[in-house]
Image 1 (tube, rainbow, N blue to C red):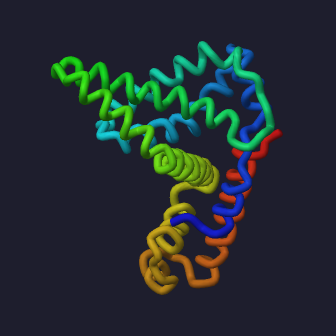
Image 2: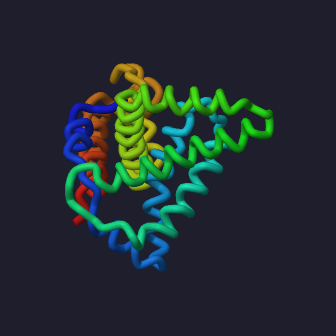
Length: 206
């Protein structure tokens, strides 16, 4: 469940210059792990919308990451909203289409099929853009949740998950843990604070 607070932060996104500059250095392993942690989720989620299996989507993630690694040095950073994600989306979309073409060529799919597919993709450009945007917000939110889970520990995060994400009542959570209602409320506000911090770090870290 996505909170109002995190939704507001997500809507204020622009790609961080610092991460892009670190990626351009090529040898910054931490930067590439961070890129994979965040953008790998985005590429994976987007790919699943095109009748692609989980294992195939993983292959596409790897393929796109390799292409980004090879091409990032030629990307000129601009703080204009969405510039980097637009570039990444183009690479990802081409990778998805190419993957489907290779997959279906083995099944002797007709040329007419591909003409029709490309026409359908062009016709659904607005929907495609919305899919990309929603998958981006999902990727940032899930990354923030995972970081906070590691930060607070499994026990604390489990209380938050039950009360906020699973929408259990404070009474139900109290019965299943050793915490009273006040302690549960405190966990909620503490974890939400950490989530906001992590989302801000992902989106803003200039």
